[in-house]
Image (cartoon, rainbow, N blue to C red):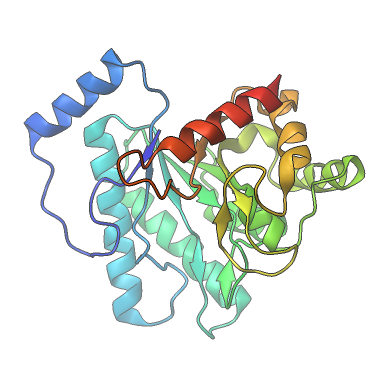
Amino acid sequence: MQIFSKNQRQWVAPDLAPEAAAAFRKAAKDEDIRPVAIHCSYLINLGSPVESSKKSSREALVNEIERAQALGVPYIVLHPGAHVGGGIDKGLSLIAEGVRWAFEATEGAKVLLLLETAAGAGTTLGRNFDELKELDKRIDAQDRLGFCIDTCHIFVSGMDFRTEKGYQEVMGHMEETIGSSRVLLFHLNDAMFGLGSHRDRHANIGAGLIGEAGFRRLLTDKRFQASAGVLETPLSEDQEHPYAAYERDLAKLRSLSR
């Protein structure tokens, strides 16, 4: 399961009440929901050279780690950020510095930060495995860092894994750069727009331009059998049953995995 631990479009949030955190931990254990991931606020941009934005982003990341620790959540998922004109190298350096700063401020926390693949729009970073590898190298904290692959994002950033040849090329490059053992979570989303479009619009499984074949290869890849997967696909238009579309997507994914 993936959640937000607070309003994802606001910087400041009330502290978690201890009784609320305890209730969440108990419910997750009782319902055997594992692992749980928290998606970080969309406002965080560790790659910004603007001092006020850099400061707010670093403090917000610390807060996300602290909230995950309180809730007993093992993963937090972060969009690496955008350089907003500062250049790729400078942006990567700022992101790495920001992550290291947050790790130092939360020393001892048993929470893994998962850097998510980006769709590549604008000046966003983490749009390919080479950039993620470079971030991993500069952060240099493998015991606290992993990766999340969003299927829509890698497709619209230019990685075509729909055919057997394409799948082997994409995943072979992934193995050479970040390594399959470090990929702990997948966002399983079809794509509304085409290969290399850099347009981050998700579609329901099999209803987009990735199609069933790409998901079948991923779900039957033995390297990822221990990795978790969550949906970020569109909800149903039926307001009485908004998650009916999720039920159909889950059923489709489970059928493809067999």
